[in-house]
Length: 236
Image (cartoon, rainbow, N blue to C red):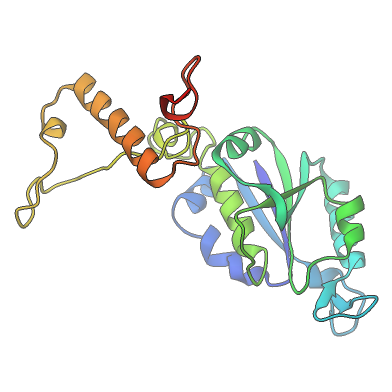
């Protein structure tokens, strides 16, 4: 998977993609993340990429011209499955969406800034808009990193344990159950005995029950376990 991220502050993303799982994914050749500076495609001598909004109002607006130039250049080099704009009013990123999008090959992600982008960018250049939540940030770089992380970690070979991503929160409509590690007793704080039993079936059943209980208590908005003829958490 190749992800091209378009930003006016590209260095913000350097450390995120240069560490840990995302770095190893790129070193293995499983993913490629290229961050582009939109300012390099400005014709302004001061490399400005924003201007005042027509009709007045507070805040500056990202111009269409440098964005169009950069996207056109990239599309001339390869085909893209999606050109994504990280936007508060886009479709909400969730695990099923990440699962589907992890099968794509090439993506462009545009990071917004200021008061947003010229609407013509969204009308003519963007194919999909995605939000990471009902809040506003100073720019789209963090949302772009979140989306990229959610997709790359699902690629085969990225995680050392291939089953790890399948047991993550939200994969089955539930949050993850509690987890523990050594020591088994710390300051008198123990762990559930079933986890020390070595009985795989009992442990799996305990984890599933815990996931259901935790989801009911903490995230009742989630669909819960998928059972034929039963809606969320068996209330039907």
